[in-house]
Image 1 (cartoon, rainbow, N blue to C red):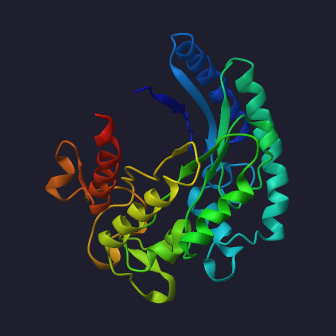
Image 2: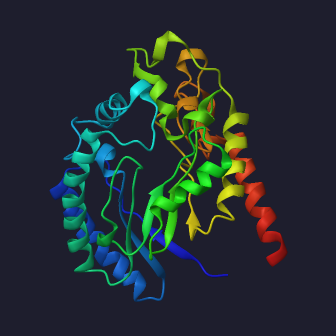
Length: 287
């Protein structure tokens, strides 16, 4: 069984020039691996609009993410992309072209990008269509059918899928974090309507099992989960439980918790085991 490496040299909160320089250096490494017969696909960033500077307003991820959420009524992501974001996508494509030019000068393998669904990417820039494709409460049939608008003569990869770990998170998909409006000086969360969500690892696990089952038969070339670990949002109680507002398969603990000093410094969530069981079941006949 072969292994394809999606090489994603991600540099968060960097500007365009700094990212270009970083990608140029990374492309040299990727080409060196390719010449050693490693099957490498270069991923030219992920949701650049919110994770890096230069397209959406804001100097930090939180500022850009909050601005993005403010463009959607009720803070719920949808396929109806607001005009403001359509205009920002024009700027984004200029940035992505500059990245692709720098990468292709050093790397001779395929190049893709991990796009948020609010980003209208010109896929002529890349060799593979890479979309972060979350389910947001639509039916199973609607979700699978929605992949059609991303299909072309190029391979289609679902670069991200997942949900947060609280009751109601599955229907919000990638917008699940938007219930967290800010944090207090003590690190606890400020939530929409001052209502603290109810933690539910089971909701996250069930969501991922369903998504895997749907995408396994949806004619996509690969699927990736967002995300394995997110240590900046840690497990707590009540309003201090920021972990439930992130998408990770494992949970990290506050510094004052002895478990934070263990190796590894995390524990699996229910979703971790659900994903492992699914892949074990589909690989079993091949072993």
